[in-house]
Image (cartoon, rainbow, N blue to C red):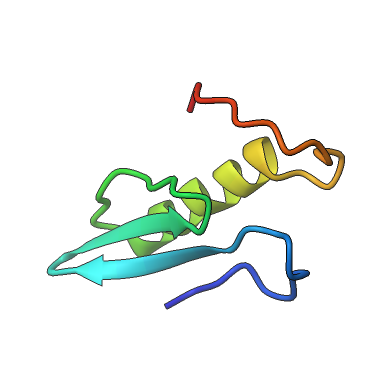
Length: 67
């Protein structure tokens, strides 16, 4: 399982999980990516999500539902 590294207690964490021959990126915020055959692509999904949705400049606690 891959995680997003050193984070604070109020930050979300991304991971990848294996489901058979597929890898899926997930986040503690509830987001999850599509099933991918390539682990690297699932990791890229997680990184893109973390950058787009959980950037350091995002200090508001908004619940934007447009994933």
